[in-house]
Length: 150
Image (cartoon, rainbow, N blue to C red; front, top):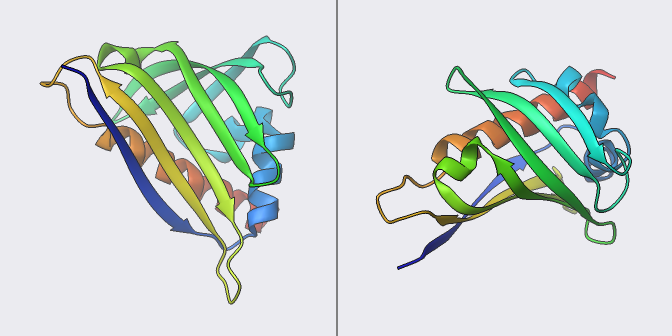
């Protein structure tokens, strides 16, 4: 029996939704510079900023080095960057794994980023991706701090 789920967290920004989405959209190759636990990124197909490009990331979760290969999708109107998992360590636990960042402007502020993971467990005994949502939230905070400092 398939166990599918979705985890979502909102993170307040000090920067703006436009700045945050622009960073993901236009300069993703700078992610390892901005994010403490993201060590390296490689482009495997396409260009860094193009829809459908294939990227591979090396990062640490709970002190353990892992990799994640993904295909990028953009929704510029709604400021959404979707990272569809293709291969990597998360697939030891999940049949499907997608990480989504949506930058949202809030009248009266602050702007926020919705950090979302959609997943399907390999089986019922596998954990929910709490360590990965924590990792993505920390990435979001690192990027925001990087943008405010720039």
